[in-house]
Image 1 (cartoon, helix red, strand yellow):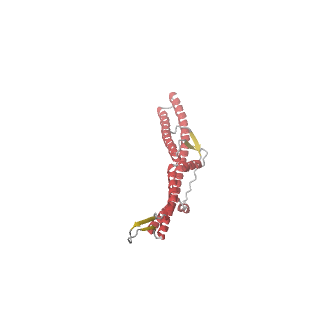
Image 2 (cartoon, one colour):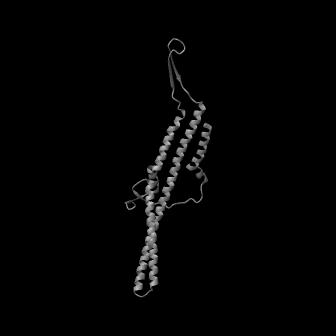
Image 3 (cartoon, one colour):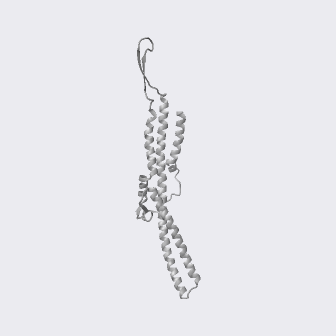
Length: 233
């Protein structure tokens, strides 16, 4: 509940906390470890068979025969299997990095929306104080006969609009607090550090940076995996 004690947190600390505690990220990390172990299974050979015979097989004499059989595929098959499993492991790593990038974006968006909402609440509260004083003066003037009811009603309506905006902002603020706690997977309610730097938005997209994004690399690797599976078949 947002009514709990709220603790300020910097954006970097919030992102680091999400990296540590987010359950989806933990799940992807376990997938990377699983694929890392699975890639060693490319060279697994079938179990060795031990064959034994006893009895009159070729003559009237009792014979005893033992044999060992080991089957294996053509060596290039194991190489192709190794390639597929290695690429799937790399794909799991890229999926983990892609999840981290997406989580960082979500935490950053929620953080700055909270910061904006906090500052907007401050402005609206100051505005409400101004309109409260304005309404008080309008009531006084109306009681003294120095103004008509229209001025007083206008002041009341303007203050009422500010109050409605404050209620809406409070609802959005509480929802954002819950969203941030969910992303960080914590019961502690965190709020942005009021000393946080302003958000600097890069207006020009960096194409080289986009090409290095884990999601783009993952799409390219999935194409490589499909080709590796085709070669294996």
